[in-house]
Figure 1 (tube, helix red, strand yellow):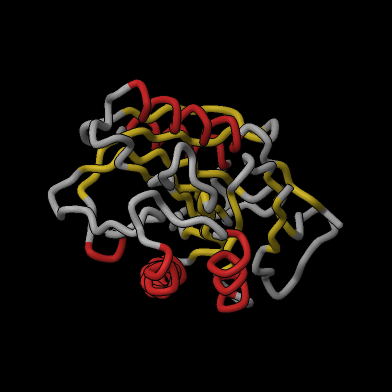
Figure 2 (figure 1 turned 60 degrees about the vertical axis):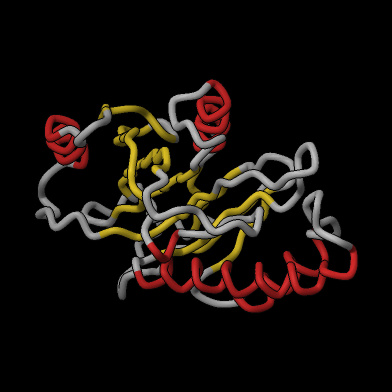
Length: 226
């Protein structure tokens, strides 16, 4: 299980959660973005990633890990600038290759009056839809949330993956966003954003399986008040 704290407002009521929790699939790890990022990256690269993808010579393993560190640090910086709390990555290869996927948990400003019920905000966002995709109201941790599923071009900060390959700028990714109100604290929200190029076809069965895996992870989301 992965757990991460939330940034707290000046006055914290007892009914406001202090953190969230997720159950991760085997081989996935959490990279905290507010503190401890460097140490977490070191652990990922030199402890978890004991293997390197097929086709990389043994004497090139260190160079591979250093290149991976540079790419992951770049991805972590970009996520932190966008309010990121945690970055989640697969670090164990499947069939000799690393999955090209990740998701980020971030605080997000909705810009809505705190007097507006979260369900009304979610309904409005769902009605607005998303270009080239779908948006729908769902339930996360027993409360209403928004789920968006769409295609997106890879930007420069997101290029590169756990496979060590740089993706062409034109390669689209499959993205799934969950927008979740912080329980008991109207006006505060978090997002959980998943991104993957899949197997190169964002509508393939393989890519759908990765999306289903992410949806299953979000299904384990819960608030912790400890």
